[in-house]
Image: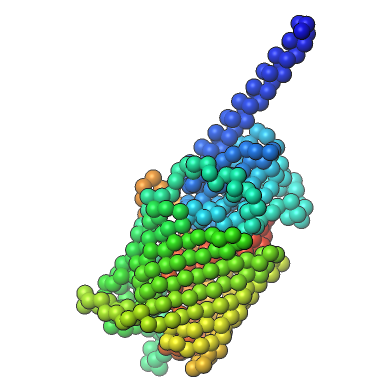
Length: 406
């Protein structure tokens, strides 16, 4: 080998070494940026010209903002024009896959790529393909297991049933400890402290709220489930199981919910309960119309007091605010009204080392036009259940990513 060839080989080796070093440095910078921003359960690999990441948002109030911020940090630090595949986790369970090229994301965020062109290049789906298989065995960094939150939930309720008084109200403060010890698991322990109570005898006592142990899971073909045991709202305790399945085009989804519960009351330092003898269930179909961020839902249910009914709702999403109307037709009553979900202040909470004190991300309320407080009643199994947190329609997330202002 002559001197000229040896020199060329040496120059190529030095160039490749410098490129590999630069890429390794950019990967480490991405890891540090995401870690410092509070993302948990981080995994990262580069394969076949793709940069694949897994991350879980626990700091940002809104999932859309968390996705945008993570893509910003990744693409600014990335030295190679890779395609990105980002898996969004919830309690360690893979929920969504974002696909976009680093160059397209940078161009879009800098205002150099029109919304319509970018929309055709951005993919948001609950289908993971083979991406999860490529990264799931990598050990996660900044794990969420063993960390917990103390979340102070405000509670407000009112009734308008008296002629001599406009509204009867109840105001509570309900701090809750929320802890996850393994993938998909969550423990919630809540205590309700009454501030103002005009709605009944039990509401004047310090009492437990949600005290639950739940396990989430993902089955093949995009089936998502949750099993929960414990004390719920609406004076219920027992077991509940839910299952959700987005169809292939992901504008349609099916949801099933079933519970076996009894009544649960706590006052005068005594817990009074009935046997687990009440079966509840609901089954519904939802359709999301991306052009207007509209969700339509319709279904049937058996409620707490064994009455059957049909229900429907229409919800419009404005960023991280949701407003809509609902109606129900039952064996014993008809009812309807509106519901509203709004964000609390503070877009970004601090990260967790061991524990964190915070307020909830969103607050949801509903108003019944009727005055029926017996029939047509259902319960919830967690304190953070609301339409913004539960909206995993890919079309909604994609629309909001495109319209999110930098």
